[in-house]
View 1 (cartoon, each protein chain N blue to C red):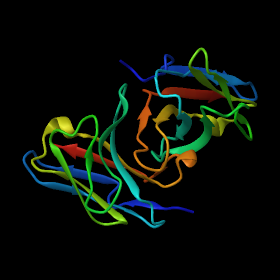
View 2: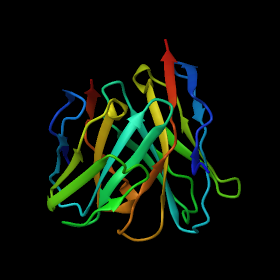
View 3: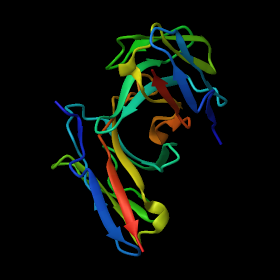
View 4: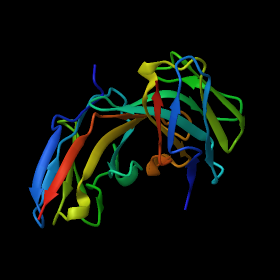
Amino acid sequence: DVKVTQSSRYLVKRTGEKVFLECVQDMDHENMFWYRQDPGLGLRLIYFSYDVKMKEKGDIPEGYSVSREKKERFSLILESASTNQTSMYLCASSFQPNYGYTFGSGTRLTVV
Amino acid sequence: AQKITQTQPGMFVQEKEAVTLDCTYDTSDPSYGLFWYKQPSSGEMIFLIYQGSYDQQNATEGRYSLNFQKARKSANLVISASQLGDSAMYFCAMREGRGTGFQKLVFGTGTRLLVSP
């Protein structure tokens, strides 16, 4: 089975901190994605990557950046965390379109 | 404009009954795919079922079936014989475009299903 692993399940950070959320997949998928999930808003795409060192903005990229130096790892960076970035962050990867995405278990980030 | 619309914030069903979760979508792309995911309280997203826009038959996976009505742009999820473990958040999602390139999924806002004994 494909595994997508997010390094932290829960994180609490202070306003203004630089925050790194890490995601690793073990099935050689080209495509990786970062979403945030908020009540009543569903999942919204922040950034995605279709190859090493390639990245594309999603629907809500402001305040975030990403890094993909290796195929298996896709990092989400909050350059200066703010309270409105308190959310659940979900990483996903995919190869075959008919099977959709495989998701990690999520990181619940609280910015205080 | 919303690409995926789930109009039911919450649904209640009794154990062993069937339930339909609604999903409508909006796209001008002739090639697209529709997905349903389940998110239990633990947070992980579990893939349930897929329907391609060119598929002739409605997709089925065990107790899950997708009622695909292309002309109405609807892709409702039907869960037969509900179980207590079906209580979760359910998301409808759409992928536009062909190939293995930009497979962005757009998600709806979700429906919370509660199954009672």
